[in-house]
Length: 298
Image (tube, rainbow, N blue to C red; front, top):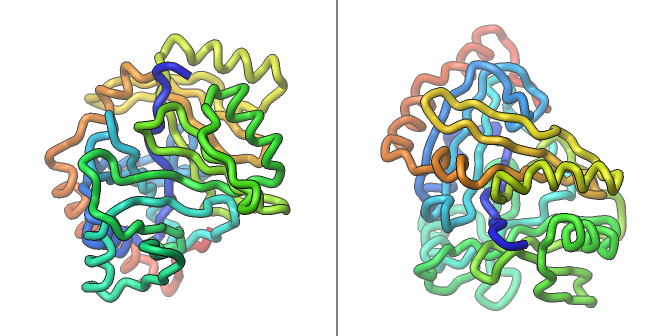
């Protein structure tokens, strides 16, 4: 689909400090921006939680031309249950492999010049041991599906993604909006998709004028809409409009108006400083310890 582009994947994190170490020191990503919120997002960006939370965007470059990670941290939740829905993010960086070995971060060689590692919380990441390219090193995100044909039809016909490769032996299909963007890989797991409580969300941008038509198409085709077209305000920044969808296996998909999002997603030079400040001031672990309680395991 012309002018649609992949933006980010949302990860729920229980340990913000260890997570920051992984993305900054192992992968070598940059903190693009960091925001603190006193109450839950009305588009459930932080999951089904109403309390204080934070959002940290990390990537190898700005979201205009890089696929990044959105790390959501709920102050009262220390652990999430992983399902079989998110099967991995693949990126190309020999430096990340070097960093992991230097820091003693667990690595498993799973193929030629290919290593598997895990972010805190258990999220799988695949590192291609080749020189990091000048363009975005993030190659693809893999999601588990229960019916590859049905899912392919959804993403191709309804969302306009192009089919770029098929592997019948591995039961995978690679899709995307453009060759230069991060791809989406669908992997048939031959069973029910379990999202656990760590369920993520993948986000895409499209021209704002396409959002009502996209919503109308989903209604016409009796497809699930999690959040009808809504405006999201960020104080001091652009107001964006989003529609949140759900594919046949319940994977959450956010489409956001591109024009406003480009303003909202501009990198903040103080992002790193703001994250470090928030982590230093986060006394939630101490509070729970004083109350002789543990943070919730979602």
